Image 1 (cartoon, rainbow, N blue to C red):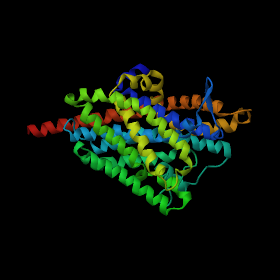
Image 2: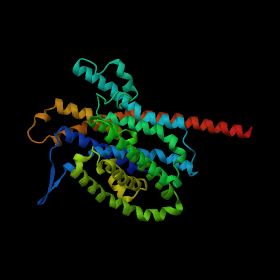
Image 3: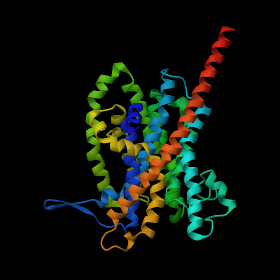
Image 4: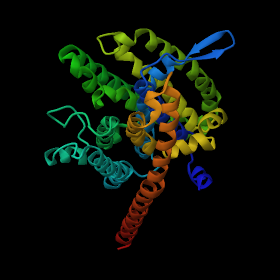
Length: 398
């Protein structure tokens, strides 16, 4: 089963990268739940600090945003380059809904009943149920605010917002517009964040900053990566030269990540303030991630070794479930297992148990819910498209 899934993916490294992103978020949350302890790895006479790496685990969300934009923008860019037909909007939204909602609804139902079993009451009234059904986890009065049952759900409406906006951007996703688009995405992010940090109360800065306008740098750089990939890699005349320089760019990604992590470790207390790091860190991080995405998309041997091996690939295959389930599993493990009362640091135990049970639930979600719904929707939309093309041929003959 795993080998078949691997072969069906033309860019398996991107699937693996998605798994790494979900794992980063899991590590970040487990580290925080265990008390944000200082961790180090002894290498001879040197202790290498690990907590700066764990402290930026939240940036796994930025990786997911870049990946999502790259993958979803490519069909629109190809259509504009006359390589393929433009995505049909109803089918596009149906595919997006089939990817996001089934696993979420299954988890929502399970968490509701678990909450009732543990507390003897429901977590919210019927008047707020609509917000959970529609994923309206955005600040009030527009939405219902932060979700009660699962702390990671706040990212889902940001993704959905991008899904809605992308088809309107589709006609403009052309190579000749690349600089205008980059200016638009980064400019919107800067204006939005400046307004949020300057005009809103401190308590609201975090939640408003990460909404779609404030995250457009990450999505935008994913689109930039898609433009580069289609223009260079999918053009036989430009591909050879492109592949000559891409490994160098990919090799520079690691030291760039190290520098960004070091900067965040130094200035983390300034991040949510009117400071350079607040306006530029996610943009730079997303730009470096775009290089990694391009390397994976081009199937560079080094990228395949890191992100397309069977273990990382499988983690990427079930990454949506891993992302959804790790947070409630972590809370349950820490509250109802002996780990919280153990002597010493709890991070390794909490992370290990959380990962194992989350991976199990994610696997069940993928094989019994997500993959079945996705394949069913693919079959239905493919049949509908074939019927439409047949009707077009008949109409042309008449």
